[in-house]
Image (cartoon, rainbow, N blue to C red; front, side):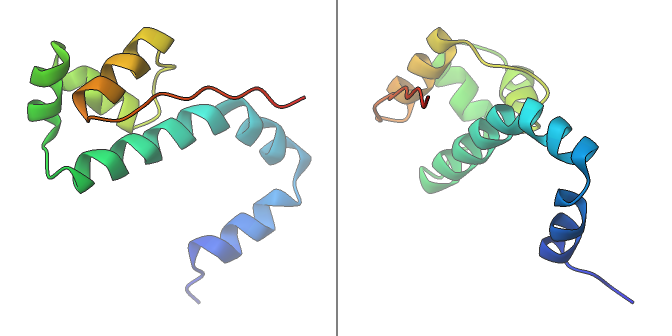
Length: 92
């Protein structure tokens, strides 16, 4: 039997340990998704984006794979490189 991502996620969300781990990495995941989406929308490779940001392709890869927490300065450089605007939000 093959289960799709949504069914797995629904199953895992019932597990308190999974929810705790998810919350710890949620920001990295959301940044990764936004970066990939924006890069693809702008028809850029990781290498092209890295060059615009004056960084290495491996840095872009680590962010896209949610393996690092990007700094605000990185996020601002990303917004500049993609012609976007950085917005930061705090929900309490």
